Image (tube, rainbow, N blue to C red; front, side, top):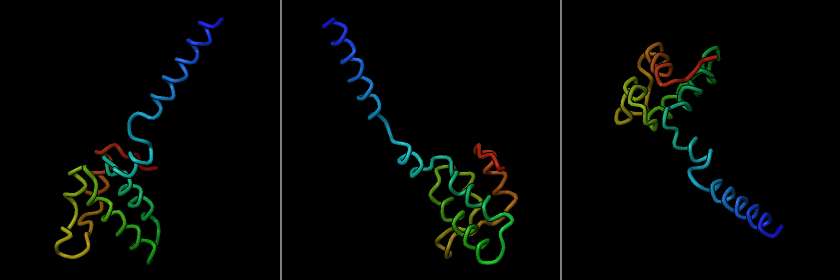
Length: 104
């Protein structure tokens, strides 16, 4: 019986040790390796109007500058010329799809 309890204790300790390993989901989302934040903001801008549209497109461009996916950054006017701007909306949408983002 003592051996079983010791074995269970070891298993529980190993499980809790593994849970703490690697980046958390929050860290992964913050690093946004595929540029999905930019694509989500871009998708939310579609169908919006006025200032909401401009805010979300601006957020998409800003998030795309931080994405590690070069295809998204290629469709922006560089930030050195002012705030980043998406140059071609259909090309940006295609780049999101190529990165694996699924539009609803």
